[in-house]
Image (tube, rainbow, N blue to C red; front, side, top):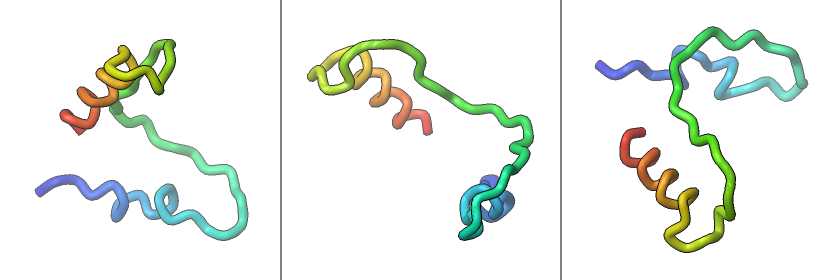
Length: 56
């Protein structure tokens, strides 16, 4: 069974109406780091985001 982050970490995904400081536990994640124009057709950014969606 897949881990349901929204269920297990409700305080992060369903925040209260009042702002507060929360401690986020260590987690593994995938990120895109770089530079460039995100609106450039077939640019590095768009290609990388496409790959990210493919593995997410």
